[in-house]
Length: 111
Image 1 (cartoon, rainbow, N blue to C red):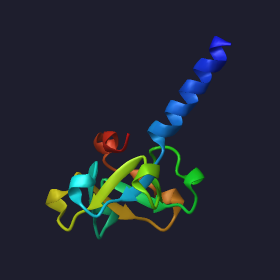
Image 2: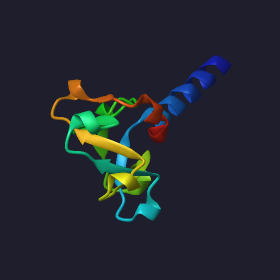
Image 3: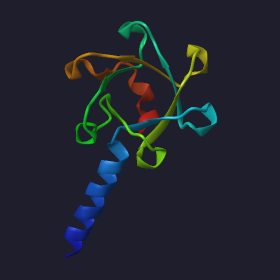
């Protein structure tokens, strides 16, 4: 019985901690992470692939699912116009196989 409860708690925590359901805020003051989209994947900290289902957005691997409400999001981001204001530089890739962290020291921003 105790093992079942512990297993359930671990699964819930792992799902919520590593999910990548993203909400794009209209103000930088509402955001947890400020993001800048770069023109080249070589300048990015994270290569992001936009998925079409929230169920495909598990893990901190660069699979992002954009939600309509900040209450459904695991992370609230703000897209900055200046790379110097950003916490994280991303590049959107066209293939899920290209999504990855280039700068692993910034992974903590999306945990």
